[in-house]
Amino acid sequence: MSEERVNIFKGAKKILVKIGSGVLTGKDGLDLDIIERLVDEISEYSKRGRHFVIVSSGAIASGMHRMGFKERLKSLPQKQAAAAVGQGRLMRIYSNAFGRHGMVTAQILLTMSDLTDRQRFLNIRNTLSTLTEWGVTPVINENDTVSVDEIKFGDNDNLAAMAANITEANLVINLTNTEGLYDRDPRGSEDPRLISMVKEITGEIEAFASSEPDTVGMGGMRSKVIAARKVTAFGIPYVIAHGKKTGILDDILSGRETGTLFMPMTQHLKSKKCWIAFTLRSRGKIYIDKGAGDAIINQGKSLLPSGIIGVEGDFSVGDPVTCVDMEGAMIAKGLTNYSSSEIDRIKGLKTSRIEQVLGDKPYDEIIHRDNMAVSKR
Image (cartoon, rainbow, N blue to C red; front, side, top):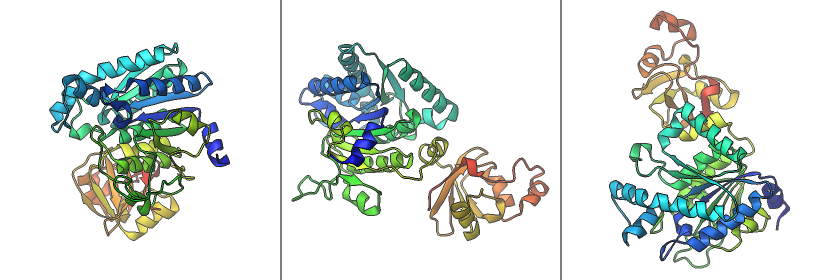
């Protein structure tokens, strides 16, 4: 038991627990013993003043079992239908399990489009905050029955990362069917070494993670490491651990050496910039020169038209766009004050000439610093 772990977990009052399909499912569909065991732990810590948010997989797996399907579903309509069959049962099981402890649960179903709209994002945050005040445990899942590729999170690892920002969690625990991150894929490898702590997510760390999912889940270890990168950028510690292990939440929250702990970045993004960086999908690119790149990265400046050398894509005012250097490396992402056609007309010009060219000058900046998340340090 390390003092560092003890201090991190002792201070976590709002905890997001992501429970993967590999944990929740067994030979007979949903593993009721595992769910009840985890709910018992969550309920005990809730009574001690901790607040929990659950991101739960299992709807599709539950629906597959109810319909008697053994093979992995391939088409989107099949997955949506299975989720429709399984989601109600999943929530009933959670509701009954928490009800044994006198606790109430709430179902929150989300799509990516719910989070890309800033007002809806804030409405969801306010709802979750109210549920916390009421002592209700929210259970979040993707709204699989209506999601299409354009509005899907990809997998619940990514959804959990987004939810960490919405809920302003102090800790994210990703419960899966492996002990944590190994230095090689433990499936078929000799003597894999469990990595107990990651202080920085490097290319080498990402290379350790397999992208191959299991038979019931959507994402492999790689998706969990990518999620860890996002969560730690929010300034939140992130743990990957084995969810079927008895007493796993108590082990983690007591500071015992279990799973893989990803340490939070010391200089982390604020909530709005996390929303811009990781939730919004870029609608185009703005190519900037070396001077503009240096001003953004090292001087904390906004993007002005004088530093722009090109524009790619068709986007409107307020859309998220990516700023890239002349080699195509990403510098930042932000909300643009001008459309792609307007930027194409004023690129390379001083701000004093914007009104002369466009007939109006609502802003000096193409992207203001307050609406920009810098990615290259």
